Image (cartoon, rainbow, N blue to C red):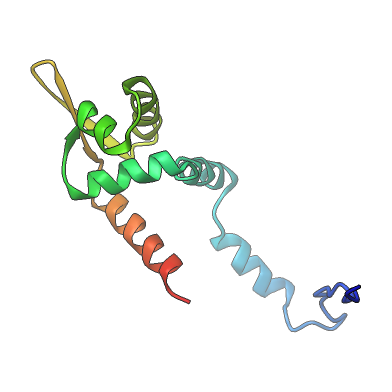
Amino acid sequence: MAQRQPMMTEDCETTCFGTEQDLACVKEEMIDDQAAASMADWFKAFSDPTRIRIVSALLQRELCVHDLTVLLDMGQSAVSHQLRSLRNMRIVKRRKQGKTVFYSLDDAHIEQIFLQTLQHIGHE
């Protein structure tokens, strides 16, 4: 039977180098609660593999719902549901041409964030 390692904790020494004034400066620059909640919601949009695959496809080019259903091998209802979530978070936008609705990434920031995240998880 393997021997358990003691749990390590990271405690500050009683005479830590941080000062109240330094912490006040850090606190002043920290994101506020409302912005933190919005950002957390935005990242939740990327917490579903299907939505990630949709964004990956839309990185290539603008696509209609039918094209996405073929690429993802999913039903239209399921794809539309995911697109609605992405649209509500302003990750994708839509453009209507006749009866066809085309989707694309909302702006260049989405592409940058997606590609940087992909690059980050790809390096060791």
